[in-house]
Length: 469
Ligand code: GDP
Ligand code: ZN
Image (tube, rainbow, N blue to C red; front, side):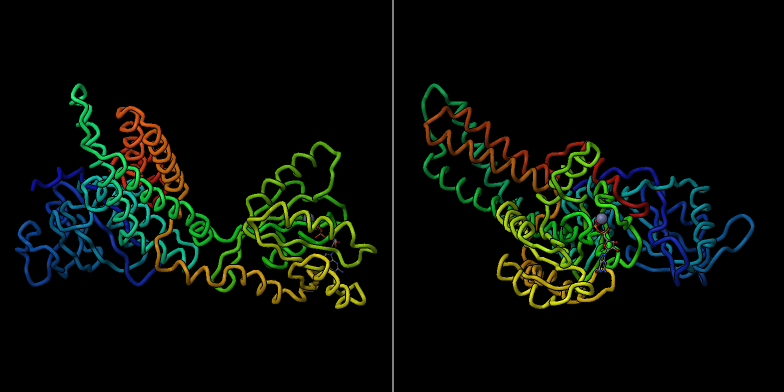
């Protein structure tokens, strides 16, 4: 097999910025052994040459510039194709101070390396066939993972589980496609290489699998981005106060004026290893004011996308009938979301426990009494919030999850194309039309793993990386 053509030599710091015990700089590409040799002196062996060193060997020595020693380092030699980028690579482990690290980087650049762009190492690994696109994205997600479960999902993905399944799917589609296209070549003779009934059945199985993947997106998204939680309720119920208390900081403006929170704001907090993405909505009422109106519309849109709604009810109201009606309305309107009622201002309301029990019966929701201002009852509320995700974590830890919107959309498109193909087969349509739909499904599946390369998608993915990865 021929080796991939090595790219320009690139260099980057692979470890986070700042002071650490050790830092790693990596270089990759054409001529990096020569570059490394010019700045590195091996202890006890001045005649050492990188070009002659075996792959996966580490060498202790020092890095110099024209003025003298910079640091003692360990140089790890990785030979093409057995490196991450499949090019010749050297990794220098040095002492972790930013001054030392920047100094070594500068020497590498002076010697002919170019500073790597964000994600360039991973991009080369992908372009050279070391990893597929899905795995490349998983590396990106691992770097940015916001919670433990997101990290685990990313790792599972990196191990290529989803890739393997999609690849099997692609092969099957490719085979059917080839057979159909072969039929087209023999079009005058009316032959059938691909039995239609069999094809119909196969496509049904594939579509079922695609549907499962598409359905996993909601759970995948929760693990990756957190539980989309909307804090809803009438103006002055205490939404902003609750948000601030939960986050422990003064983020949204709390005021006595109803409807001060014009638009929504979003903040995250971690509880029980679960990330909650909190949104405070503009006061929900049948607003008259124009500015307020836009905010209210946005609020409703947010609620429609929520996984969890925390409805704040003001216990000091004289009459709850309207609120109960609204809560019931929400419950039937937003069936995808779980709903919790937080009865606020228990510090002001006498007879709170009785009222809370009444509310529980009237709404059929989990209701907990809190004082957002005094911080009372918040542990119970958070516990209640996390019960909605308990089990989800365990359930999906090991299985394949779709966590990216790009994959979700491609899978849905593939599924739609298969649906079309099946309808065409059912109505005995022309082979050409069926083949077209299969091709299209094939392309969508291929877009996910990068078998079908789309420059725009590549840029979108690799632009999110940090330098050195
Ligand atoms: P929002 O319009 O729903 O966001 O309500 P705010 O959070 O702005 O609160 C409205 C008013 O109620 C403010 O004056 C808060 O200080 C007050 N408030 C909020 N929660 C409590 C509470 O638990 N107890 C008391 N006594 N006052 C509260
Ligand atoms: Zn508010």
